[in-house]
Length: 374
Ligand code: FES
Image 1 (cartoon, rainbow, N blue to C red):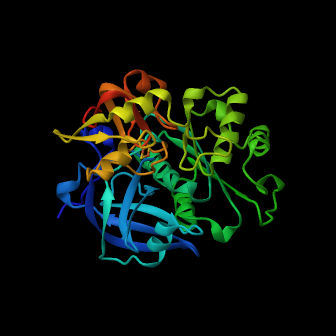
Image 2 (image 1 turned 45 degrees about the vertical axis):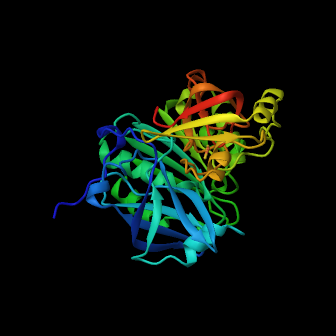
Image 3 (image 1 turned 90 degrees about the vertical axis):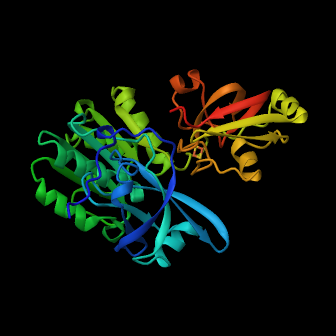
C-alpha cells in the first residue's frame, strides 16, 4: 500500500469551511513529565481535508465530564507523513489538557477539526527562517523547521527555544535528531531560566534584552531572516516582536501565534446603542454554511452570533471563542455587525467585510453571515 502523503495546503485545492471528523489515535509519546505527543492516522479519503501548511493547528473536541470541550493544538509533524501529531502540555486546571494527557489511549477516536491557522511558513519561500519559541510554543516550530529543511535544500533555520530546565524541553530527542540530520542548516539555541548553562547568554528568559544580546553576539540575525516566527506566552511574543521591529525588521516578516492575549490587551467592549436597539427589535440572522441556509432570531445584545446560533441548535465552526484563532471567520453578506475584540483578522479582511462569529454582535435588523465565502 502506498504511504499517504499529507501535502502542503497550497498543493491541493482546499477551499472549505473547517469540519470535524472522527480520527483514530495511532500513537502517544511521552515528551516530558507533563506533555505528550498525540498522533492521528488520516484515512486516505480525508487526505485532502487534512492537507496543511506548517504552523497550522488542529482543534480537538471531546466530551469531558459531560461537557463538550474543544481546544486547539498546533501540528508538530512535518509535511509528507501519514499521521498528524499535536503536542499537548498539561496545564493547571486545564480540563482538556488533563483529559488528553491522562485519559487518551491508542486506538481511541477523537473528533478532530480540519487544519486551520495563519501562522504558516512556506516551503521554498522561507529560506532563512528564525524561529523563537518558549515552552509549548515549540509545537508548530517542529513542523515548520522539519518541513522547511526537508522540503528545500537551500533553507536554513535558526531556532531559539526557551524553557525552565532541560527536563521541561518538549521534543528534546526529536530536536537533537533533527540537529544531527541538518548539522549545517539548523542552529538550535536553548535558553534556560532555572538551570545554569556554561555560556551566560544562554541563561534567563527570552525577552527584549535577550534578543538584543543574541543579535549583538551574532547568534541570531533577524535582519537577514526572510521570516521570523514567534510562538509562546503572549507577553514573550509582544516583547520579541517589538524588539525585532525596533531593530529595523520589517513588520511583514514577523509572524506570531497568539492563543492567550497578553496582559493589558483590549478588553471586551460593552454592547453599543445600535446593538441594543437591534436586539430589542429582534435581529433576523441568516447563516450560510456548506451551501445551506439556516435562520434564527437574536434578541440579546450581549450575545454573539456564535452564542445565539448555538442556543438555536446550529453548529458553527469555532475553537478559541476569544477572537484569536480565526476558525469562526465568515463574511457579512447582508446587514452589519461589530466585533467585541479581534486579535486575528487583518485590516484588509475587515475592509472586505469579514468578521468573527464568536465576537460579532448585530447592529442591524437583518444580518446574513456567509461561512462559505473564504
Ligand atoms: S472561535 Fe477563535 S476567533 Fe472565533
